Amino acid sequence: MRSHYKIVHTTCGTGWGGLEKRIFNESVWMDKNGHQVVIAAPEDTPLFQKAKKYGFRVYAMSFTHRSLLNTYRELIRIFQNEQPHVLNAHGHTDAKVALPAAQKADVACRILSCHDSTNVRSSWYNRRMYKKLSHYIFTTTDYAARHLQALFHLKNTQVFSIPSGILAPDTLASKDAARKDLAAQLACDHATRFIGSVGPISGNNGGATVLQAFRQMQFKICHHLVLAGCSSDDDKAGLMDLARELGISDRTHFMGYKKDAWPFYRALDCKLLVLDDTGETPDERVFRALLEAMYCSCPVIGSRTAGIADIIQHGMTGLVCDPENANALSDLVLDTLNREAATLERVHAAREQVRRFHTVDAMGRDIIRIYRLHQVKRSRQQGWGHDLQSQD
Image (cartoon, rainbow, N blue to C red):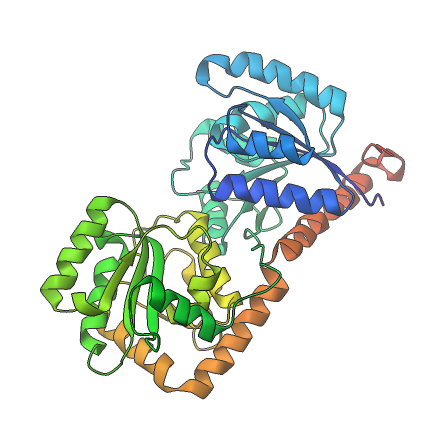
């Protein structure tokens, strides 16, 4: 049984969102644990530049539709030269060429990471990618895994939910210091306490429900409400108008995107995550923000939608309610703030859950476990003398 692997990641992503951060953080973990990582991505992208600066071997690839045939040929050459044990394709467009190229080059383990299952359709080519070209499908939520399993009639040994692990800071600010700092930022009295949410927030994506719930509880609590990271300026303006209509604008604050949200979670007495039940899987940054809050010992309340209930175990690690039920949300917030002993038990359980299962280290160990299981399966199929090719 080999102990180290060479992994090639491909992506057509050009931004620096949850997908790209997932690839980079996973790659750094693999490197620190003795594995080799190669990244093929568009050149003028944050991921490519960060990977190159870190010291990973990188290949500048174009995944535009015009270039796909040439990219397919180039990837075959790369796989033949690099001889990786694993290909992990992270985008629908790059997977169209990376998976067949890896099959052509006889890459032992081929993985399709699906970061957004909502736009996947059961076309003939998708069925080929998900059922024939890929050995495994990785998703970021149980909700997405169940959706793809049902859509393509996959076995539960083919689809794995591997949430993006959080990368926690070495130290966290004390809750008291974080509260006072947030109060200073918002020009509030230093003793002000807060509940809040961090984006993407809009009137059609939970924002209106949160505001309506706050109106119902405003005279029963002393807290201010903070909404950080609205989806757009128009969404922010619409929610500010609604706050004025509801008579809560004097205790409602809107902040921009929080690049470093750790102090924000520490400052809150309760984090709210309400998403409408559209059937779509939200950006994995939404789930990572929830896990980060749980790690920060911040009580969490979410909606029973889109995979949130897969993370929050109602009554054990947090509380959940229907997404448009402002009355229920208000009751849960009051329960969280007023029943300190029960809330503290949930907070401790939530932090332990994240520490054990949702850190980058836990994510990396789960992925390696799947690599090794595949190695055993392949060895048994081909005979012990035909193991994954060694790079030692």
